[in-house]
Image 1 (tube, helix red, strand yellow):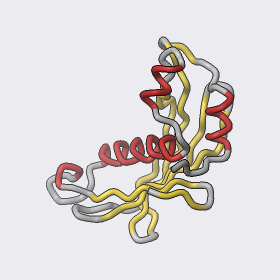
Image 2 (cartoon, rainbow, N blue to C red):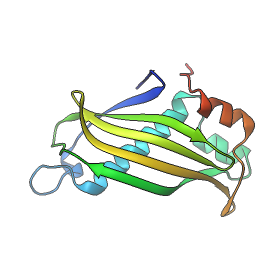
Image 3 (cartoon, helix red, strand yellow):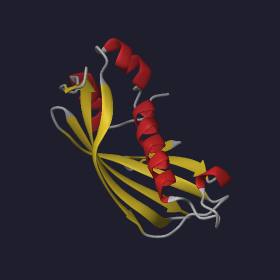
Length: 140
């Protein structure tokens, strides 16, 4: 896990459970990989989602929209890298650019819009959280 050039990078090994009968990553498995990337971006900027939820009257991020392009397949035992970068932080939403790479080769490109919600309704992203998402830096 590392941050560089404004993006978070997370290495993940592809396991048998991530693939279809032919050893190629099943398309829905990429959604889990992308989710891990988004979660680890928050964690790397010092945001713990469970604490955030507990301290902000149940605030959580939910995927509102995602576009995804599958360019090349990943296979069992590959080590892939999920790259996640914050592109725009608005009142109650956040737009992220994500890519999945293998040895520098782009396999998947995704644009993701997440909404901040609490009690099933949109809520404004708190200012401190907004500042961290606008210019993410690793917190150790």
